[in-house]
Image: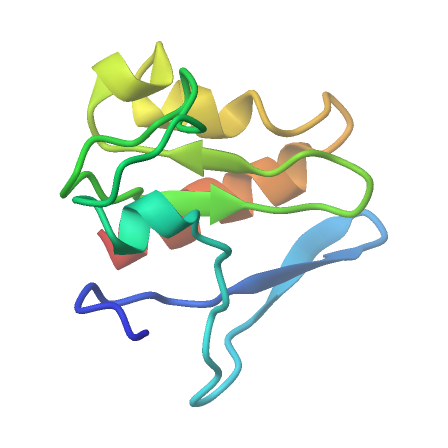
Length: 111
């Protein structure tokens, strides 16, 4: 299916000691895995678990990095446990300050 919500796919490529390169693939489609209950909310399901999303709740950003679990960031603080900027920043290691800053900038621009 296609989302009615605009999805911007941005890749941040780290460069040695310099701000990361921002790549925005032209006409690229972002593929996000969705559980069946997200697509069919009226279907009965027992596998929603505590991470179940509220219908209509759309993430502000989905963060992905090799070897790490992904993280969804929401505008609303109650869904992150912190303001979105802090939630996004916590995804990055302390030595990834340039990547963190570039991600914050890209998400803020896309809002």
